[in-house]
Image 1 (cartoon, each protein chain N blue to C red):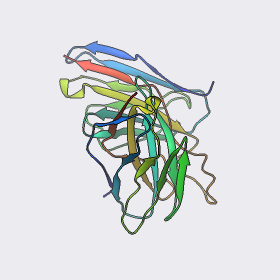
Image 2 (spheres, rainbow over the protein chains, first blue to last red):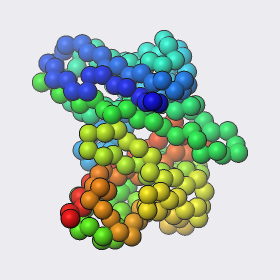
Image 3 (spheres, chains in turn red, brown):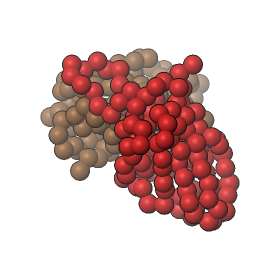
Image 4 (tube, rainbow over the protein chains, first blue to last red):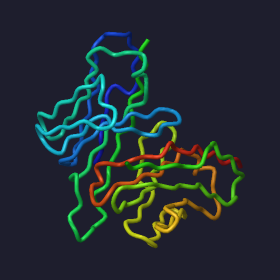
Amino acid sequence: EAQVTQNPRYLITVTGKKLTVTCSQNMNHEYMSWYRQDPGLGLRQIYYSMNVEVTDKGDVPEGYKVSRKEKRNFPLILESPSPNQTSLYFCASSLSWDNPRPYSGANVLTFGAGSRLTVL
Amino acid sequence: GNSVTQMEGPVTLSEEAFLTINCTYTATGYPSLFWYVQYPGEGLQLLLKATKADDKGSNKGFEATYRKETTSFHLEKGSVQVSDSAVYFCALAVGTSYGKLTFGQGTILTVHP
């Protein structure tokens, strides 16, 4: 089954304790991205990667790191978590960043089920 | 910059009622527009999309028409079901860069039997 898999799904941790949220996709997608979802704010992009070893900041990158050493994996790293990083996190992937014309409609984001993180 | 504004929720309806969720946007460049749905405990799924003015996206009885003159992409369904209870997100991507989505804040829909 084609999917994006995130782990852990739920995590409670304490301020300053480094943690990693893993994301893996089995669709050979080039593009991967991390979003956080907060009430009243919708989803905001944290980081994205257009391909292996190519990553860039999204709208809210502060306090996060990412790496893309393999095509299928895109982990999100919180080096020193703080309570304001308590959120619901989503990983997403798509065939590529862009849709060359003529538009085919196939290149849309596939999301993981989410990881709920609480930082005390 | 780009932004998406959705109507305030939550929205509570009885089964078979008519649904409208308003969505307006501002964008630099020509956007493609999307509606995503998030069922309880799950990730977001693409519900429908439209890539140019006057296009109508449709899926599972839901429809939305890309209105460039009013910068809107309102979601409608003629007769909702309990199974439609979810959070609905309007989103845009400028040009063909679908990897960079800008989302609205989401609208919670609850449908009662």
